[in-house]
Image (cartoon, rainbow, N blue to C red; front, side):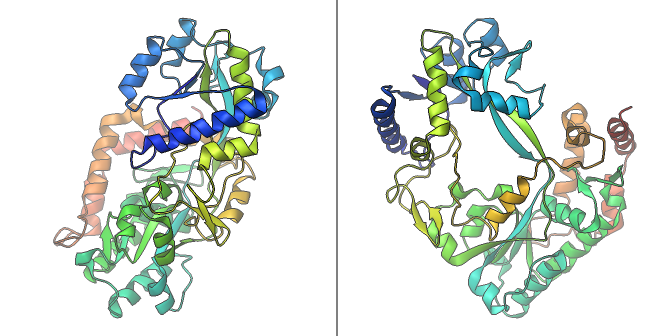
Length: 442
């Protein structure tokens, strides 16, 4: 018996995924003489309450309040069981040293270890209307200047209408992040960057000069909207959009095939994100008479390709189909949110960026050091320790500009100097000093 808060269909047709669970249970019964049921609890607060109150279960997905559950004796100690019953999982904690992982508690293993490669920096894409891009001669989009030129083509040739959101859409974070890549800075968010081992407020650099110039130039021509670069807005008629590749949420697209027929997504430049390999714990196993069998079951989920694909994607030609070697979910069929298990052999989605397979291979090269000799996780600041300052700075940074609908993006007569002065403060300078000390190990 499995408790989970995930794995629901986007449009609420939960019964459809329940059918898939029934098929998967029949498969495990036939192959392994083991059936299973999955209890879905849609609201997080209810999930926490029912798990903590001891709702009957053998496997708990993403168990809330792990330490409390361990102290109360609900979760099983897997330290001795894992090497024999699920060696593939055990080897991951040998290969990846992550002592702070939540799978450990007082030196013992209580959650089933799972390797996870975290992207610390972004890979940006341009999602562009195919007809529009073809009309422009399919120019490359390797730099922000390339994107500006394409947007100006849209204005000059009657393809853009900002009032209808038919233009170039972006957000401040993505524009700043892309400019950081072009100028050699590591973007660490909220308008800060690192270059040559030094933390700098980006408003004092050429990054914000180019950022302000770009927004001003395209705003004057009514070629840009700030915001509206999510996939739902793109689907509604946007001509071109700058988007973080990790924000290309296929489940949010109402019709995968129509989106593919109208839009294509292209990587910008050859940047490979910095990554860090982590150990996460997706499953807790309840300490009961089924503990060993539950661990063996989770191994089947991760090693039986047929079973894994059924749980992750559903039934071929019903829940997903293929075109041009990539899969999509038909427009009238629910999309599965894969919170229960990850695909062992992920399928390439029809709306993934061009070159996605090659990009995945580049990511597999492992963790790259941002600054030699300094762990990457020390580079990215725990912003919550400066919550008030960071919230205020984020508010200033991301609300200085308008969206562009109904009025210009830039406030009237605003200048780069105004923008810079607004962000300057003693708190900012103190934050930079503390951040630098963290990186320097002081």
